Image (cartoon, rainbow, N blue to C red):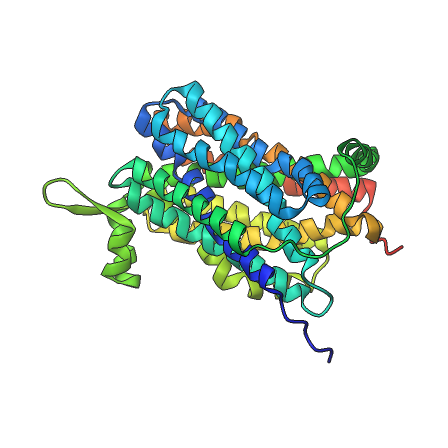
Length: 429
């Protein structure tokens, strides 16, 4: 067995930065619906902000990755921090809708600049002996930050929203210092591809109508429901479920210390209520189950296992709705089912997209995957107002039943598309 190459110091520095960035990003994003409701804005206005934020977060990496290849990862990392830090601090000051929308646009821009840089560092600092472990570590670091960010920010916003924003800003400040002091530009071949050439190459990839149609279907039937889950769940838990019951559930399983940290006292008697954003994500489940799920998923063909993941996600949506119609405790099962569906579908479909290109163009085809993710950003202007409408009717759970139907229709549509157009073949030369 070939000896595994040790990771260079910059690998660990980059992964440490990733934890801090995901801590700030998800710490702000997951609780933002609760924040805008606190300020009195409508769900339609919230949906606009969510769409802008996600759209910039996932479209900008196509551009920023090109600049990083030309000018170096470290320089572009620092540029992202210089966009991030003042934007987060502006949240403390600005309360108008236009001000908040522009501020979240700026944070999305900064996140989009940052997004491909750590994964790029991992890519160029690993080789055939350690790349699987390297990307496994990277994926784990993403989920560590994404799990602890909402927990800590939720705890702080229970005291003051400004404390949460300051904590996010401090996290970015630490990233800046760590990058300046410890990040050493990894050795690699510098590409001189211009942005114009990049767009031309992407145009060539997207000129394949079958491939373009497939990306649109993935965007509509996978990414829109996925982002709707993250856009809505914290508000749903916080405002529509029995958070006293959820607090007692967590206390019973994990103990008073954990339960008290992710809850807040309310009223003169100090009855504790669970903070919605503390459980309304999949990071903590992915950290525990990802390797197990991946090992099962790799034994099956891509499209069937992707569709299976979609079906499990749909079941998760149904259970989330049932949590309001029956007992709030069902929300934990709903989140777990959705997380398993995400773990099954997301890595496999993105891997599948790389199979469609010759090896030397795998990165280019993965870049076009951001088109599908960008389509998913429109979940904000579709499902967030719909959730508001159902909530005013007294049936917020209807949004989850609608999402379940959306995903189930997607399974059928993707099956019919593959049956008619044929599966994509893996190319090796």
